[in-house]
Image (cartoon, rainbow, N blue to C red):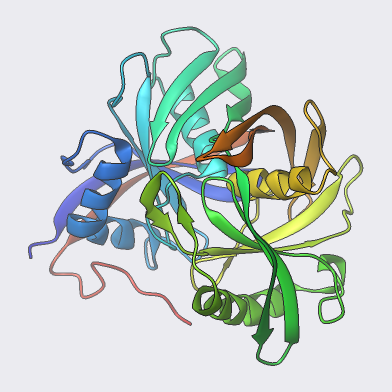
Length: 334
C-alpha cells in the first residue's frame, strides 16, 4: 500500500497533555455514525494515526484529532480521536484541546456562540466555552453517560501481588486502583512504578474480565489504568495518573478518566447530583468535574458528568509522510 500524504497540524496541550489537531489529509470515511467511521478508519487508515502519533513525528504521550462534518442534524462538527493507544471512542482532554485550537484558528464556527454540539464515536457531547478576545480560556464538556461496569475485581500482578480495582466507563473503560495493601497510593509512587506495573495489571484484567458497552459492541476492553491517591494541589478532591498506550502517563487529569472516577464514586454514594469533583493530574493540573444528571444505560445506573479544563496552542506543523521513509508509520521504543 502506498503511504503518502501531507498533514497540516495545530499543536496544543490540555493541562499539560498534547493534542495535535490535524487540519488536512482527512481520509474519506465510510459510515453514517462516528462509531462506524471510527471502525472504517481503524480498518483502512490506521497508518495515518501511527505516522502522526508515534516517533519520530510524535512520542509516547502524543494524542490528536480530526474534525469532520457532523453526522447528526443540529450538530456543529464531528471528532475522530487518535493517539498512541489507538483510535478512541471519546477523549476529554482531546476535545478540550481540539475545540480550543479549532476556535482560535477559525476552523470551527458554532451555530450558537459559546456552545457546540459534537458527534464523537462514543455518542454526542455538549460543549460550552469561555473566550476573551481571540483566546479560549476554558472549555466545559457535558460528557457521554458514564457508569460503573465491574466492582470488586481482583487480579494477581507480577512483582506487585493481589490488586483490587473497579472498572468504570467514562467514554473508555478504566481499571481504577485505589490505595490498598500492595499499592500505597499515587503520592508514594513515581512514574517508574506506574510504567512498570500498569501493562501487567491491564493484561491480567483483560484476561480475567470482559467489558463491552451495552449499546456499542465496538467499545470494549479495559484499555486504561487509573491509579489514585491524595492530591497535592490546593482545591483538588483527588489525584490520579492514567496509563495508556504502551508507555504513556496522561499529563492532564484525563477527561474520560475523571468521568469514570465520578461514576465509580456515585455508585458508592460518595458523589450525588450537583456535586463538584476537582481531579488532579500527575503534574498537578486540574479538571473541574460536576455530576450534572442521573440517567441509565440499558437499565444500568449511570451519570452525565461534565469536565472543565483549558488548553494552549503552542505550534504549527506541516508533516510529510511517504514510502521512501523507512519509518513512515513510526516506531515506539519499549
